Structure formats: C-alpha cells, structure tokens
Image 1 (cartoon, rainbow, N blue to C red):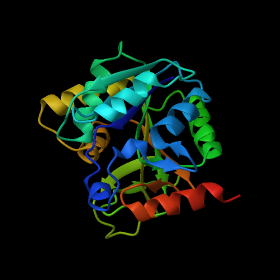
Image 2: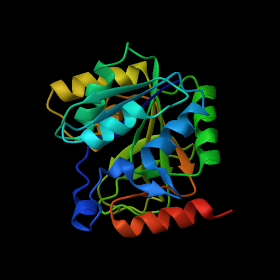
Image 3: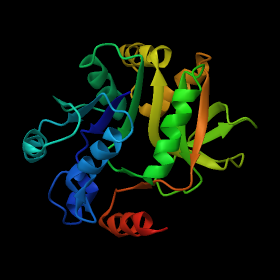
Length: 234
C-alpha cells in the first residue's frame, strides 16, 4: 500500500491562536501529527509514504529530512490552491500506484479502527474507493455522505437537508480507476476535494463508506486537547 499525506496547508487558524509552527508539527501526547501518521502507516503495510508540504514550511521540511522513519518517505514541496491539487502533485511524484491511501495531516483517529479500515479495503477488491466516514461532526464545513443500506456511497452533500448520519472523515483509499480521475478532474478545472468525490459518483465508480466511531480534525488550539482526550479513551 502506498500512502500520502496532504501537509501543504497554511494552518492560519492555529497561527492566529498562537501556534507558530506548521500544523503537521502539532504534538499529541508528545508526538507530532506527521510522525504519528507515518508510524501508523508503517504498521499497516506501507510500502512508501508521500508527503506534500508548502514552499513556506522550511522547519517542517528539515524535520522530515532529519527524522528516522521505518518506511521510505518522499517529500514534494509545492504550494497548491487546494487539497485536490495537492493530491494531484503527490500522484505525479509516484509511479502510477494501483492503490493509494490519502489523509490530511490533521486527521486524528484510533489506530485499531484505521487497521480495520485498511484490511477492509484490501479485502474488497472490487471497490474503486473506500472512504472513511464518521457520525462525529467536528468540522466547520462538513461534507455529508449519502449511502444506501449496504454503505455504498450515492452522493456527497454540503448540507444535511435530508438527514444523513455520516460526514467525510478525510481519509480516502482509492484504486487505479479512481486515481486516474484525479488528473482528469484537475485538468478540467475541478478545484476542491469534495467536488472530486462528487465526480467519482457521477462517473459511476463503486465507492463505499467505512464508519469510524470518531475522527477529530485539528483546526484550532482547543482541538489539541480534544484529540488528546479522544486518544486517551479506552
């Protein structure tokens, strides 16, 4: 399995609240977000980890280059207009992977749930994509996920006009057919990850939701405490 981490954001909300380092360097129980993700990936059959950082993240780049990781780590340094463009740049740096697991740098989850998620993706070989979802709504602009009774994804919605129990968790496992859509989406002018996901549905790709009990995003300083308490729960 090839893994990717989008770590190219500015972290502007954290910066306004006094956290001056790049968001991937936020620590939970003494471990940086970026290091935690790489360690989790290494324990879940990672062949390589590809990370995109923005061009103003010299301190993060230095950390990544100096750290000792148990799996090959490849860095792409480029400032992009959206997470979809970051994904596009990551894929350009790889050798046409058949499968790829992508996360954002601030996605905090329980490792046992993530392990089950990866195992489910590897087992369901007919799927084009397995998307992590959660009923825990913590995002300021959540993307709601409409599913059928078998958890097949039928739509991605900005509003919850028709009650939907799940929101996107920011973790995506995709196979070659879905990965090919990244280039087509960007080159046709699609500019947001949520619009890319809608494109996958419109193109008839087979997508399924995988529920996590909880996924926490780190957008504000207060979220650090929330995430640490969550990880400490048994």
